[in-house]
Length: 119
Figure 1 (cartoon, rainbow, N blue to C red):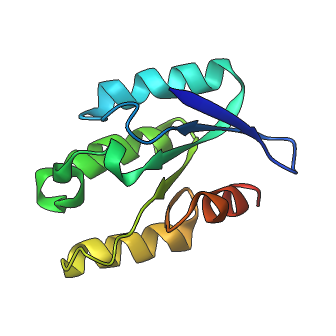
Figure 2 (cartoon, rainbow, N blue to C red):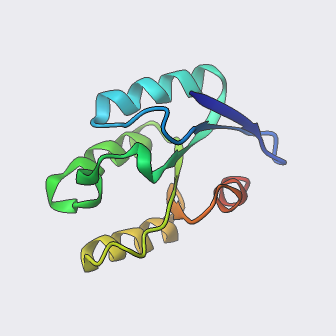
Figure 3 (cartoon, rainbow, N blue to C red):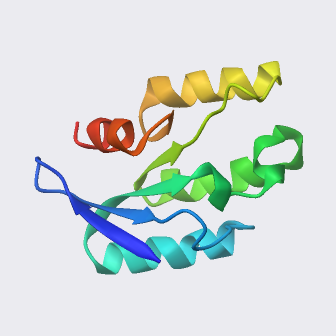
């Protein structure tokens, strides 16, 4: 299930509600992107539980495959969750670099996601 938020800057954001779906591959994220785009959303918010465990193991390539779609289609993504439990240095570096560039962000709360996407 998707909930739509209207931001102060007049953009719309599609939030995939926790437990609604698990994204396993790039095709499934494309389906969500199409639906969100149809509703004129400029960004998507995913909760970490909507992503498979393999997403957070960078060597599997799942994260790269999914996140590349956001870059290709110029749609922003914010992933909400607690990422402190992941001890992988490469994952922590990846999260830090993603947050720096701004297309993809990893945040701790829905409010933080909406605030970042409002910029």
